[in-house]
Length: 513
Image (cartoon, rainbow, N blue to C red; front, side, top):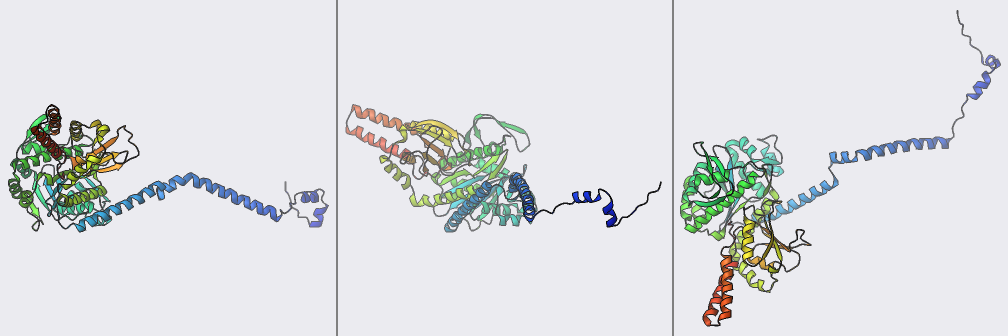
């Protein structure tokens, strides 16, 4: 079947039934301008609403990706401002103090390839000598300018530098690089450095007297012949070999480097006390010079001159401030700068004030409120084992009430003792025992005590003989009740003078236990 298409003209189409009517019904009326405008506006609103929903939903992710949270930004700005202020202060201190000689001492262990390091700070004018023990293979945050310099050798280095990476990358030049890093994080000029092998360091330790040391747990180590040895727990006599094993032993805990530093600090403090007691300063200096390899130290004060004029009150031994997480010790450059600045100021005032500072505080404390009626909390903030317990025993013998002792490690070792009180005037008599402490008035103490003492590295030497002075005073009181003779009066005065000497030990610049 075939179909043929026929085209009608307009007039013919009009004659076809129904065509006109359908065409009329299908014809649409054009919308008005107002309707078209509001239709367009509605579409725009829908699009904007959709964009708003998407923006709100992704705001947190976009903010985190591009800039971080507003709180983080504010915190970063504040930290940067604080760091700039610290750098300015410490820079001024370094520039103004022309008497300071700062050197690094490295003890290199041939077996482990580790370098045990200390920063030695000597004031030529005051004869004060401070030693800061630096953690081994620490991580440090350095300035951008130093990062650029280090990247010439270590391409993938960041602002946080691992000292072990530096050692591997720089080889024979590692000590010069260590000097630059230490200058960067401490804010002081390093005048030179000494290098000593671990075997020679053991010989140096043997040059002094053996030291009695208390070990809570046994320590295992390998001797020069690679034979496994052990130091039993308890009170032991340490020679050079066993002392070195004690100071380098790692116990496998999350804070093993902190524990190692504490042992090294404790032992070396006792070692130097023996040197001062036996007056072996000159012999130790000669032995040191015969064993060490010095670099760029020709214009510096000789070791013999330093030790010859050094007294126990003018010597301190501390741990450089930082924190440890899962066996990784990180130095806080801001806190290190503050620590070094505090030591520099203290070294200057050692000569200026002498023993007058503690004496004046003792004399003025008679008019202050006694802290013996308050409960006192003692915190070990110096990373020295057993320090809080020793201060508890001493202060209780002096008549104070200690309600709590604990360790404080949120900031790393603090260099200056802090005394927190809740009212103005409280705690000032405690300056007799902590002459360099700062007293802070706080709103409240959540742990229940009235006074908190955070013992810093400036107060690691606990005075001895407190019980004897207290007993002597009680005996004098008993004799005064029985008799009023002139002899008893003289004895009472003598006992009082003895007690004053115990509590005002001059400008306490030592750092014993």
